[in-house]
Length: 279
Image (cartoon, rainbow, N blue to C red):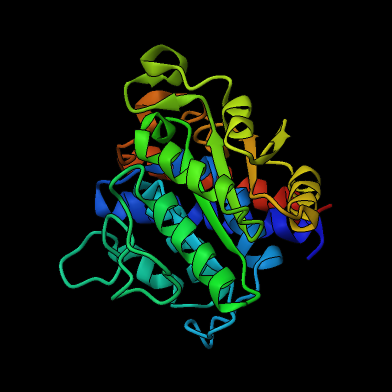
């Protein structure tokens, strides 16, 4: 897809995020919105997947290690055709297949249940090792939060991935700078993130703007061409990207907009979509 089409799609993904969290009256919009562009790039451009055959054996795998940003993944899967976009309004409701964290048993397109922070990357590393042992060609992608990498299990998994030279693994860190309690650098600084991954024998790509498709395209191309070691893409993003009053506000990590805030957000996204259509 061309960048403009990706931008239009990501705008629809953002509408879905806001709609789902508003309908549920709970959820995590901030980190879902910051990752909307990388979700869109992965599912509409990068990964070998087929919504009509979600379990095809040679598909690329994706693990949402920061599982609380499920609204972002759900909206992307819906817009990609895994299930109806209307389902997003059932987020977190009893009987819905869209629960607060991804569940592999119930939702088409989910490769791993996740939510307990730090564990998703371990599952992704296991998948990547499995592919190597079986001589399978699929690649494995996992998305972590910058607050999440304060978890020790992340670095155990990274050490193993580097040791086993898992060049079919791409670890993406959504570095929006904020977590539930404030700035990551104030809560428990993970910086320098790039040097830490390098120390575990990763090829590291720093992306100055993880909401920019030219930069994402270049990063994933470089990751694909990297042999003999796993890749970590550390991307700077804007928490709450696309909704003005949510941008760079830690308070929007894990709360839902009220009716008035919902209307404001959807109007902003509608105008953003119209502006993209005029390009």
